[in-house]
Image 1 (tube, each protein chain N blue to C red):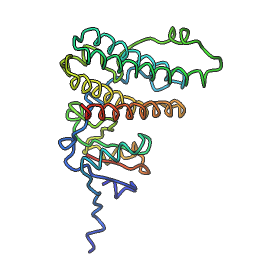
Image 2 (image 1 turned 90 degrees about the vertical axis):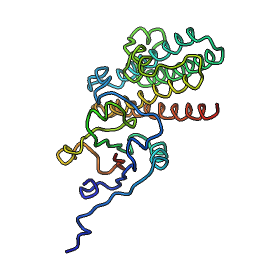
Image 3 (image 1 turned 180 degrees about the vertical axis):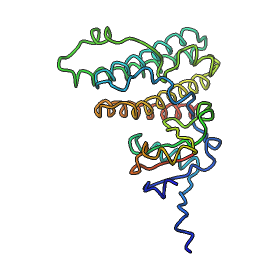
Image 4 (image 1 turned 90 degrees about the horizontal axis):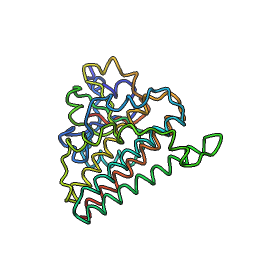
Length: 191
Length: 73
């Protein structure tokens, strides 16, 4: 149907979702979309994205406290550090386009932590994935599930947001999530 | 009658090719189109997929960009 309607490159994914062996996302198409109205200016997008990263950072920190295994504790610590790096790049992007440079503390005061990356709460993630918090593989797998969910959310948002610059920012963050997902996959393979 | 003109077969790609294609292209360059029912999408979908159930596809083609590569499942 698509090829006959002028779509230039159409591929059929053989086997569909059953053949898909990488991480999937779950939930309806509007999951997490309430975080954005679609009217956000670029600065607003960055504030919401920062809050999502903050939610995940806090999640990894709290999981690290619960874990008994030292390797897993270390892993949660590394995962939380990655979120801090994401936050720094969002904060830098904010100052790049803001008229005046805000100190990090001032910026954070404007940000309200609403949900984890991907639009689900901590409890919802734990209920969904029930990870063994003593298993590195389970923890990386959980992190990959969250990143897949985040990638999914940002890509769905990208089509909702009207401002082109806001859309570019969301696409850029989505691409970072994709790279993060790939690096977690490599880490999992190395265990 | 040349029946071939009515058939517009899309190339099939397997999991490895799909994963590789998605990883090599940014989200702005491709559309991952899920044509299953909403309940199936809700249960599990490829991250970044756009859901347009097959019965609605012909009426909603304008929501898609024909210039982008489209991966359908």
